Amino acid sequence: MVVYWRPGCPYCMKLRLRLRFARLRYTEVNIWRDEEAAAFVRSVANGNETVPTVTVAGHPLINPSKRQLMQTVETYAPHLLA
Image (cartoon, rainbow, N blue to C red):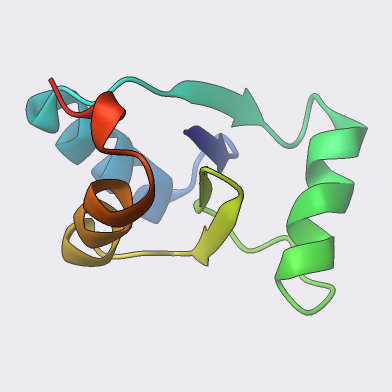
């Protein structure tokens, strides 16, 4: 699972905190430091750099709720659950 984020984004901070409490394994990518990551986010978010964007086993989620994210993990990547 990859979490695409940017500094100063309150939605990113909230999701990242929730993920830490959920004990999910994931990688964080700052789209302001990685142009390829920013391009990927734009490609799945209608040309926008909407963050947080999360990919779970190749399935992109744009600004997902914790519930949406957990359902996607349970469906496509249950091995990520602690």
